[in-house]
Image 1 (cartoon, rainbow, N blue to C red):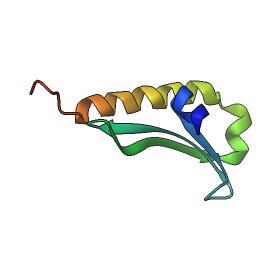
Image 2 (cartoon, rainbow, N blue to C red; image 1 turned 90 degrees about the horizontal axis):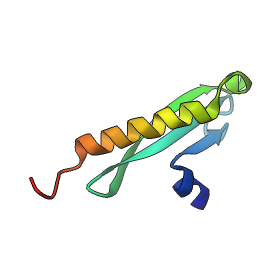
Image 3 (tube, rainbow, N blue to C red; image 1 turned 30 degrees about the horizontal axis):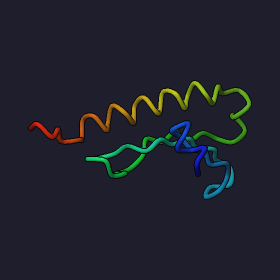
Length: 75
């Protein structure tokens, strides 16, 4: 769990869907986890995908969603 907090994303390899691999990053609303931005691909494609690059994009998208949904203290 600490590794997920440090890098900002988690991966699931066939945990819920045997033939699927997923990457997710949480988004927050006012400091509370409200959901996640997730990409799921077939497990057989994992060797041909740059997982770190996909994860970077997902983390960026999750941060953007957080910014859009969080109410500013000055509002």
